[in-house]
Image: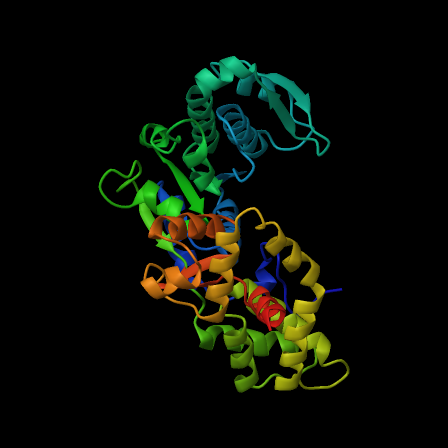
Length: 379
């Protein structure tokens, strides 16, 4: 059954809230053949925004290939992931003519092994040594095939979780995409990333390999007014009243992060039961329910840090008092380290695990429900 709120995965249009300006800019750049960097922390709705833009471009006749690079670990996986995304876009599902597939293969300088995946799409395989040395040729050919398939219509390649390329090879592969993007005339490449520190190293400042290559869209939290109105509207559509003050409480209690806001709103809606109204008491009960349902997962996350007591101590200190002064003597003493390097190492590791985040200059716990669980456990 349809739920009033959705969290945990990219949302369908029904659950999409605001982002009107960003949607307009992103779609315009995609149809205009301009490269775009879409940056945001996880759970801010980045992928939902991109998928809505893709749908709009496709309705206007454009070609859009979407490649998720999250699980890519080397050049071979990178090349095959992008090539498969382009093939899915250009060739479509099973039922394509032999000629279209043959024509597609003729456009590749490196010949792959072909098989059909369970979903009916084409799967590619390469000799590891050959693909490792020729991965940029494979990606370049895929971009050319995408552009040719689009004809005079827009063609777009979305590279989601692009930060993964920074960790491939000795020095990362970010710089190689500058040359590939320069050759991708009339094609918009959307570089989407959720690890801001890594993405900023790739895109910002002197020496950044992709600096100045396209427009950057940085997603912030959705404004309270728009999100509260959305929460009220969705509650009403399911037969419950949610007043503005209670909607604002949901927004603030979930740290204003869109995914967590929807998660708490759904839990509060369920806590209200048969009542016609969602109250502040329901929000409190809903918050507790989310924490209880995830307690074992939170315990495992903290236990997994057992090999690094410094990370555990930094986490415990931040949950007690978020701070911008992580290199002050008081903070170093509180986490029992002798120098700032140990804190830097711990914060990088915790950030990579998405356990901490920076809000402005302030280091804080990333997940409000995990924060509540940890505070309770620490007494």
